[in-house]
Image (tube, rainbow, N blue to C red; front, top):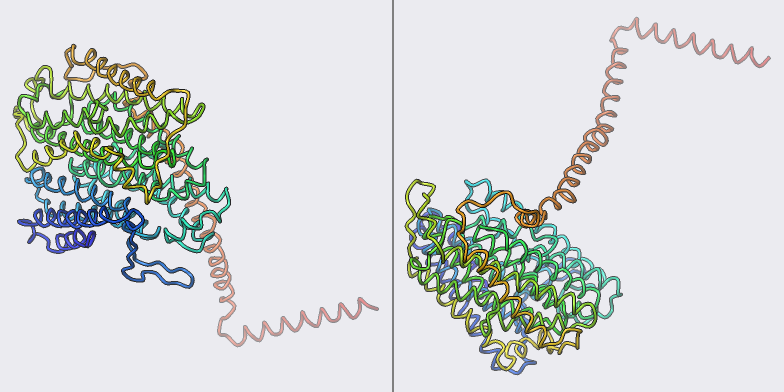
Length: 632
């Protein structure tokens, strides 16, 4: 029932058509709320059981049976999957409710809720499946739903381009995941989680490393990690609830889930885990640097997501010392990032969908609920002491810094630096949006009217308030008495204490707070004490220009992948047209031309045939005579 309810909701809303316009949004919300209630019931049942009894396998039916390949449509309920079920349906329910108000004037609201239900269904399948093929089904379902939702505004070329970009870049990662599944099946003859994890020791080192890298490639595609991060900021072209759903509770968390779920494979490959941590470190720095340069409120939050998912990948890449920490940060991030995106949507709702922070200013007086809920999410994100992000993100930084030798210095130092950059760009966002001069009074909306910022309706602000509560208390509740670590231990193993790196625990904790405070101070000096120009100043220095161009990620992808791919496609088309088709068509033309010419010999006149026979006879006699006299 967990995924059947939103699946049924999606089916009804897709098939009912316009008849569901009046009640489609209600059905969409109720199905996800019902799934959340079921998930909560299952969670409390598992919580009351002994740790070794918290994993349950459920076979629904035999799905694929071809020779030696047997794939069941089965579910795996364990602490990890139940954790994701609560996140997906809980935060997803709030986003659904928020969407009632946000999409109130959209004529396609019923279809929007159908696609939201489809998204939730696919994500639930992804985390509940008990084998890699069912995971892949959910994986592709999420990709399809994201394509539909990112391209929701079909009349905007930018939205269509963003949807295609997300779809194509995710296909690159999906190929990696598919190849990893093929390798597992080829070497082990099974794709069932329980059997694969029990027999992973039978695989050679090279095979395990290849599987780890291919799984990571799939994770990078879904979670927007280096080098496949360029699609994620463009996904902001969809409605804001879509951004909240993708960036907080569903799609981008799939990659982190994949690495955590396959932890028995990564446990036997130190090199595989090292590659995961390096990808996480590179990505968290990329996201934090680019986030400092944008003026689009949603894109700043998008790059913040790229960076924060990088922290999660860093955490799960640390192995037994970080699997639970990565999931811990994923949960807290689900609260405050969903709240931040919904808050951004509330600002846009009051500002005629304007996303340029340079056109804001002083909005705290006009949107007090949005200001306070957004502000709590901001404090949680930058790691303000005793809020959610402080407990989860700082734990990852400390675990990374505790790695031996150069690893601890590089990983811990990069994570600390990104924390300072996060504090800078988020403080900049807060100051430009809610404080300072009311710059919107000098402007006109695209329709020519003046801006009249106002607070959003209760159907939008109530979910924001609930998420703000989670932003404040979720971190403390989950880490209290190591609750989240103990809960996840049956799936991820016991949390191992990190080693003694070059940087001490006190140094890392103090340094992170100092760098975060420094980031806030610099943002205040640069933005808070100076007038913010309504038009972005030009020209700018090379570092700022590079950040605004996404550190040339799109240019690099185009130069290294897109253009060579286009050239290769054109070469193959030419080879096919002129080579393969040329040979086939040439042979056909030769035979056709030859037969056409030979057909002229068949005139139908007896005298012609008699003359031909006479000529042939003369030639044969001449040849015989030549042979006869030539031998004498």
